[in-house]
Image 1 (tube, rainbow, N blue to C red):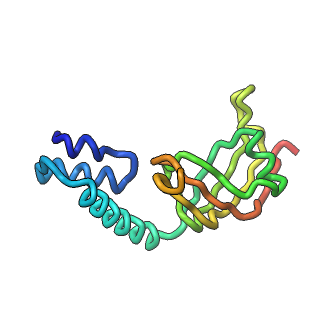
Image 2 (image 1 turned 90 degrees about the vertical axis):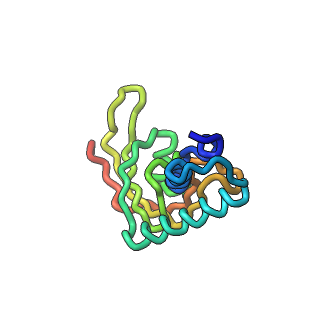
Length: 144
């Protein structure tokens, strides 16, 4: 693999596509500006494809110190590794996880993503997302 392909290896789906294209086309060198432009174009196409697909539901493990403030309505954001390609409109199904017992507590809630910033922008690391979330709805305490 060329040095250019190594430099643009995968931390996002667009970068994965770009790295594969570099390999297939046997590109030896590419400027940073051209690489960023290509990655942004690929990302726009991927975003359009996701938008056509519609909102997704994501089941997420949530530790008590993060779950409780969402449950009571005081926490209105999530900062997570963006390994699920989160998008505005997605539903996050949060299941409270107790790391001490390594079991779910039985409390579950749902929120919607209302705004998202994905890294690497605004100081957000590559591969992570900061999301604004709705007030929780469909709260369940299955242990009650």
